[in-house]
Image 1 (spheres, rainbow, N blue to C red):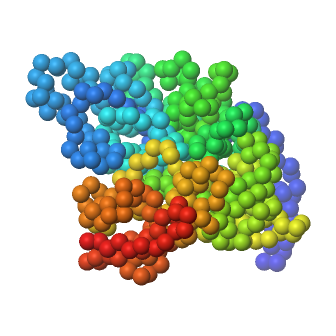
Image 2 (tube, rainbow, N blue to C red):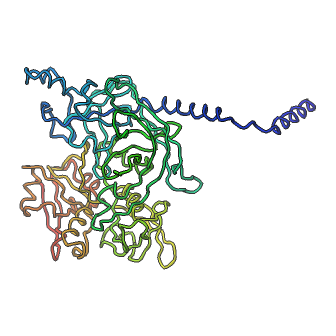
Length: 516
């Protein structure tokens, strides 16, 4: 046995010593072909064609008071109301692929087998009806489950989802090296771009795909207009993939929003966008959102049907923040804001958020914003040539872009609230951004919404005609610093006594509001 074992080891050694044959060009092409087949099999069932109509001729659906509620379409019901308009009735039926040319279309990807579709928000903005065609000649009308205009993303919810839907798989996308994990999106990376578009005379039953590559990872952009607030719009500061692909989807420009940019394993690394904010005179350039951890965090909120509440730090920065290579130096800290409460000081240079290098103002917007409100993040700052680590509980960034959320907290006696940091930002803008608001806005929640004729509306009417200026600091004597704490303290109570104050007053004073 010992001799046989020695002989076996010797034989294996000889085999190992023989150099492996270099793969031929044909071998390499077959390997790529195999990966393309794998990518198509894995991701193909998840890529949809999203047809959008903005016609005002549809019958008004029930429940239109709910945000994003578009409803389905019943041609028989339409003809009952308009018996002579047979041609229009057929044209409004988005389930018929022959009507796609009369409306508009883009793409989307399935992110949940229960029937949730991800697409850019500009695709469905202003829509009166949306229909989603899926591979296999199945589909459904859809409502807008949630949307965020700042990031230009929307999640659709199929009204009658087909069985056995396949959700696309997200890749672990990294733009930067982090420890032993290296960046895996870079110029030259091979990609598969997959779209499910419309071409006259061809059924919408399966996506088409093409091999391409990433040509550039756009991390920061110069904004020539210094008056533009970069934080207002993701297209001003967010990372994008510039990619090359030649899709023939019935359009001269061969580009479509909502298509999937995949790695060779069929995992999503980007979602295409044709937003005019990224337009270029160079027709060959194509852009896609980078589907990294920040992107996925926002998508997860929309998947739940909720509003994306971006993180807010509460600092002013020195230098030209409209120039991406300016160091992230804190010039001022908002009194009683998240940064001030955590101990950040003027003169600090922010270098990391949760261990991720912060090289530019754009990086700070991405990583703080996507961390979301009420989240604790670890910041590393350089102070007096030393690294200092601080933990910040983020506030909520004021968002002026359109928001759709089908899942919202139940109101308390007709009252909904928002983060106090939003009120602080509103008041700061009213003061021109230069004057501190009576020492800042203390922890609390602001009045966001009062249902007409509700008990809360009646109670706040006694304090004047501007309820949005009131900060709620206590519920029945207990401190409340966030909306979550407010709803927990007030939900199910027979009555609530609120301690409120107007931070814009020269000398703010507490008052009490009892509901009902």
